[in-house]
Image 1 (tube, helix red, strand yellow):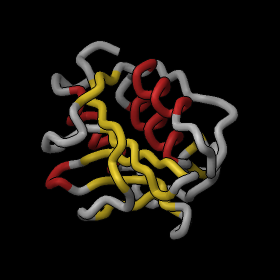
Image 2 (cartoon, rainbow, N blue to C red; image 1 turned 180 degrees about the vertical axis):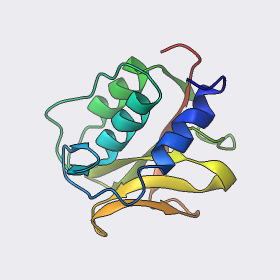
Image 3 (cartoon, rainbow, N blue to C red; image 1 turned 135 degrees about the vertical axis):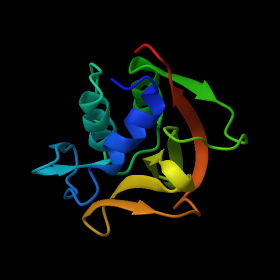
Image 4 (cartoon, rainbow, N blue to C red; image 1 turned 180 degrees about the horizontal axis):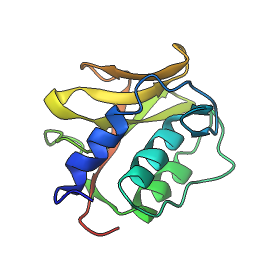
Length: 140
């Protein structure tokens, strides 16, 4: 892995741009959802991944996503502080839909966009309200 794990994670995520969207997808060739995007990017950085199971596209609880980040070597950050490359952001898209996005170089972000049907790189603003943010630690 790179000496900068956050930069390596961001680059791995950006490299998945164009992969098709698929709910619960964990294979870039077949499709990824936002959790799959994070899992595959971590895997490409040489990290062991523990992905959540049994979550839905729409749900009232974000608990599976909170535990997912922390089980995979991320440390919680202040959501009001400026984002850095490699940060993982949990967004509230609606009252019943949460979503993960990864900050990449230049303040852009990559995420699995269900509406467009693929993983995309976009510029701010984020598509939802940030409710949690994590930073990848050196060990995970």
